[in-house]
Each structure stands twice: as C-alpha cells, then as structure tokens.
Image (cartoon, rainbow, N blue to C red; front, side, top):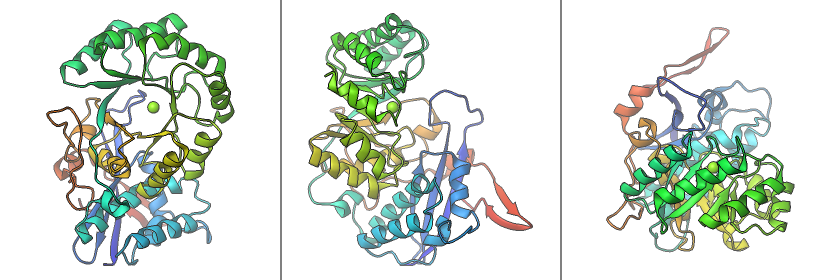
Length: 391
Ligand SMILES: [Mg+2]
C-alpha cells in the first residue's frame, strides 16, 4: 500500500491547568493508505509544536517535515517501518522535536501495517505469547495526606491492587510531609497492594536528599521511587545508586530519543526504566529500549498518561516479555484518557491483557475526538501550511 495522508489533530479540554496531568490535551496522528485503511497514533507532546513538525516549510536538507517524509511512501513490511523511521529522523536531523513528534506517526504506521497484514503489533515485533500485566492506577498526590488516603481507598474500592501517586505536594515542604503522603497512600491501599511513589523530579540534582527520602519511605515498602531527580541528572542518579538506597529507583520517562534512555540506564543505573512510546520515537524505539533492558537485566515499564490508544501502543512493546509485570494505567478523571479510544479493561483477575486484533487492537472514538478537536489554520504569506483535516 502507498501512504496517501498523514494528518495530525489537536484535541484539548475546555480548561487546561498547570497540574502535571497529561490528559488535558493531546495530538492524534492519522495515517491513511491508498487501499482505504488507516492507522492511529498519539504523542505525549505539545500539540502545536508537534503539528509544526508535520508541516513546517523546508529550511534546508536537514529540516524537512514529517508529512513530506511519509506521503507517497510504500508500506508493506516491518522493514518499511524501520526504513521510514530512519528516513524521517534523517530528514528532520535539525528539528529538535523530531523524535518526539514522530512517535505518533510511528505508532500509526504499526497500527496500519498490523491491520494490513492481519496481525497484532506485538506479533510483528517478535516471537512469543502476550502476557497479562498488573495495571497500576496512576494518579497525582492530593494536596493533603488525608485526601491522598481517601483517593487511595477509592482506588482500592475500584479493585486496583497497585497504584502510583505522584507530583503534587511531594517534595514541596519537608521530609515529614513527604513521609505522611506515602504513609497515607499505604494506609489507603492496604498492606498487600503494590505502591509506587513518583517524586516528580522534586530533588533536582540532590542525590543526598533523594537517598534520605528512599530511606524514610522504605518502611512503607514502595515497589519503586520514581524520578527523585531531574531526567538529565544522570550523575546524580549514579551517585544515588552508589549509596545503595533501600527502594528500587525508576526513571526515564523524559527520554526523547534512544540515546537518552541508554544514558540513564547505563550511566544512571536505574532499576526500572520507564519509556513513553509517545515521546521516544514510537513503538520502534521503545522496543529497542525493551531489548536493552532485557540485556541489562533491569525492568522495563511503560510511561503512559494519555488515552488507551497510548496504553495499547505501550503494551504491544513489552507484552511478550513475561518478566516485565507492571503496566502504567492512567486513572485520572479526564475524557481524553477514558473515552478517546477503546479501553483495555481489567479482567476479573484484575489484570490487563492485549486485545490481539490486527494492529493496536483499539479504535479511536471519533465522537470524543470531534468534541475536543481544536480547529487550527496555519498560514504563511497566503499559503496554507496546515488546516485541520476532516475527522
Ligand atoms: Mg513519572
């Protein structure tokens, strides 16, 4: 088949706040082929910056937009996806957002190819059966420990056996407050649940404070302490690991390219590497990180704070790796998380399994997409560079 259209769409809730909640807006990518088929992807990125990467005028041979790189190309095999990945990133060598923005196109290409070949994406990626994962409800800390405990109790009542709380007041005040937040999550979830703590880069480059918090949180036995430090504080991550913290350290969601993930794995010494398929360059790059994690003997886990289109794309990357048990499962109350795509619901046993239908196995809910679609027109000197396509 021949790629005939590459269309980004800007979706947004009516009100966007400064909460660290990535479900307030999104950018969807639709790729169409000459046989009438289409695939869908989603980026965890600024929608407007991303759309610019799909339509910006050529500056020179290293700044060529993503539409230009893909439209008219042939897509028949996995090798074509790898070839197009290389071509698009080479054409956009000097566009610093290129890996991030290409993520949505790469996911859409895998979806499209899977539908074309009648295969689920995980099967195209490699051998082995898909294994169920433990979904951990991923939410933000409430403003007080008490409200946080109530949120944890609610998640427990919803049947979650694992939950992650992050950002919000964590790291804003003092150690006593930070510990109270974690203690109340444990109280709310119960002793048997998996509890993850996302510090939301609270301690910057300060490995000593990160270590002190890991020690203080250890009595509540978190599965991991996530992003105690900034994404590029690789030396500080290494210093933290040299102190042998009593809680495993997770990070890597900020990786915008394969090299970033390699850096934080090999030089930062992470125990869990968390990869966002909608940031790092799509399924193709995320799968390379999964393989790197397998070689290093560390845990791979997805970072996903978007719709179930992104949850599905993330799960295809590591579904066939039985050792990687946890699935980040967005649980914030946003229609762009809940309703934008077919949901991967939890089974009676509380686990999440892939739908092994062709492609990603989920459908975009067009009514939801249309409700939050932001009409956009980008024009230069009378020439239209981008006009929101029909949805
Ligand atoms: Mg995080």
